[in-house]
Image (cartoon, rainbow over all chains, first blue to last red; front, side, top):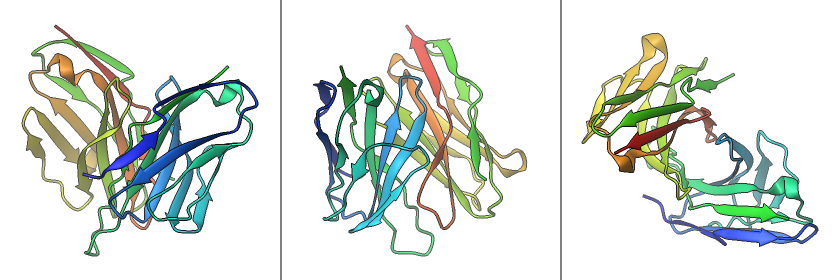
Amino acid sequence: EADIYQTPRYLVIGTGKKITLECSQTMGHDKMYWYQQDPGMELHLIHYSYGVNSTEKGDLSSESTVSRIRTEHFPLTLESARPSHTSQYLCASSGSGRTAASTDTQYFGPGTRLTVL
Amino acid sequence: AQKVTQAQTEISVVEKEDVTLDCVYETRDTTYYLFWYKQPPSGELVFLIRRNSFDEQNEISGRYSWNFQKSTSSFNFTITASQVVDSAVYFCALRESGYSTLTFGKGTMLLVSP
C-alpha cells in the first residue's frame, strides 16, 4: 500500500485566485497522475508524469499545469480559478516492480475538493 | 482503443443480500491488467484487486470475489452478504501492457441499506 498525501483536503476560493494543490508520495514511485472527478462520478485523467522533469497532458483538456521537480512531489496549479474548475482532484502514483511482469498499480491520495465561487 | 463499460449506474440492496457489479472491457492487446477500486463517501479511491490477462483464476477475499472471463471480456465483482459499510462507488479499470495510464469505467454506486 502506498502512502500518498494531498493538501488541502477542502478548498473554497474566489474566482481569479491562483491555487496550488499539493500531492506527495513516500513510496519512491516514478509515475504520478492527476485526475479530475465531477459529481457525476466519472474520472478524467488530466496530467501524468513518468519521472522527474517529465509531464504529459491526459485525456481531458485542463487549464491547470503541473511540475515534477522531485520524485515525491507533483503539484497542480491553476493560475486563475473559475467556477468551472469546481471539482474533486485526485492524485495517484505507481511504480514499476522488480520483475518483467510489473503491476504498476495506481494508489490514490484522499483527494482535494475544490469549490470556486 | 480500450474501453471499460459498467452498465449499472446505481444498485440498491438490503443488508445481507449478495450483489454483483458488472464490468465489460474492450482491448486489442493480448496482455493487459484489470483493476477494481472502491470509493467510499470520504472520496479516496481504494485499490481492491488487480488481475493479469493470462490469469483467469477467480479470486475470493473474505466477502469479495471476482470472476474473470476472457471469453466474454468480463471482470465481475461479487459482494456476499453485503453490509452498510460496502456502500460506495466501485470502479473497474483496464491497463494495457506498455502503458501506465488506466482506462476507467464510469463507476457503479452501491447503496446498502440496513
